[in-house]
Length: 265
Image (cartoon, rainbow, N blue to C red):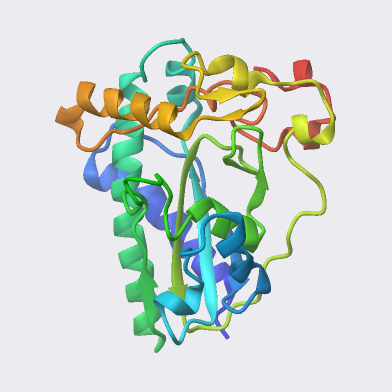
């Protein structure tokens, strides 16, 4: 059995040295991880929750025994740069592009570590693997991370981890057996706890995220405008306004009690 701490240490160490090795503009806080058994029954439920074609782990890797999920949190300065209304900040766009590259490289590295230890692994892309008509993916990192116990969903439909939601999610599969992480008993989102929050809705000035629901097409249109504006950086189809400087940006706000005001910087 692979010890969780070995994988955790490898991911943390790789992310810590990545900025120095590649001279990235982006800096990151320490990642957090969660593990799920590949045969967890909730993976089958994603075909109902997300879309009928959503893959189960063994659809992608027949020998999969464990799903490794992780969240790489941005440094707080990235979110602070993106708190004004309007188009995405350059710092957030850079962070999005560079973190996607980090996830690709990190997944390849962890897969290599596992293979050297005698196990097989399947690295999965961080993004841009969605259907262009439904705007939905057959492997949703946030839903997979939810199954693994990495966090709970916020009103903005994104995952809130113990280190907040400002960052990027990654995942990979392996035939190594790793003890699963337990799922949280409580919600991390203040709104879902019954607290009058709505900060994420207030921060979406484009009308994509509303109190009555989420307009996926409108959100996608904003992402494409941002991608065009920052095309020189890579594929920067990002926004992050609903995540930037809200109670759940950098931590699980429920840990601090259930006061929206207490959670703001």
